Amino acid sequence: MKNINYQDLSPIQKDLLAEAEKAMEEAYNPYSKFFVGAALLTLDDQIITGANVENASYGLTVCAERSALLRANVMGKRMFKALAIIARGDNFNTNEASAPCGACRQMIYEASQIAGKDIEIILSTTNKDKIIICTIKELLPLAFGPRDMGIDVTKYQK
Image (cartoon, rainbow, N blue to C red):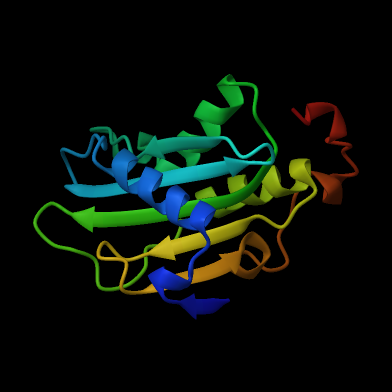
């Protein structure tokens, strides 16, 4: 896990963050008024985005990260190498980089097992003044996934 300045990001990392930022503005968030955007990078360099979608039955809310993963799945994409996340409040910018919740971490970890790659995660504040680069294994150490159950996920690789 490392802190990095925006100008030190690679062009593709900057693109991912920009696409996550665009997706953030599409959040459906009438309850929390918190906007989150995520952008996945496939192994073939396609970017797939998602935004948070809330629900009056709060537990049914879908985070931006899971939204992007679900969208990618429907598009026939399950092989990822990176994910960028950015967030803001209704009338405030974040002071700390926003990280995925536990449920999202678990789904990202499962995606990493399908891809056979420790997915890079780019976490950013709204103003991009604090950026953290880490991997899903750093965010979810000692994770449990399909391989722990003896499941061969290679047939799900797309």
